[in-house]
Length: 127
Image 1 (cartoon, one colour):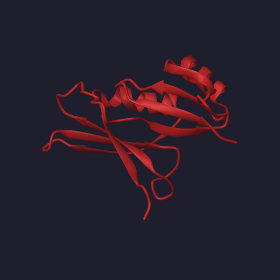
Image 2: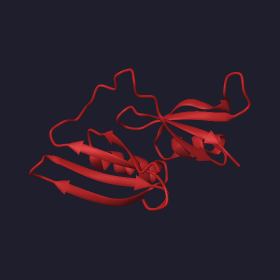
Image 3: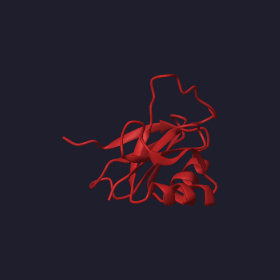
Image 4: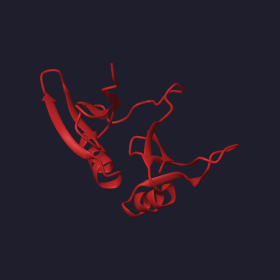
């Protein structure tokens, strides 16, 4: 078994694809249109789906906002330099909600950014 993808509901598919590709550097892997079922999908990731888990961005036609609730946490992405990653996110128009620095009580360097729909993405510095 392996993890295939995580689905996030988004309010504007094009805006979300731009964020994940242009700000976070993922690739658009594929899209699916289901007009009869009133939804559209875009799969984004850092590698092909047969090699790694990806994100499925789901746009339900006519829905532009979702309640995050209090159960969702975040998606985590490994980066070689969290400080540099934050600067790049800001340079590309993204929002950093927690600047890079050591996690409380530890030495691992993390940061948090937020996508256009309010989803949190943790950047974890890894060599």
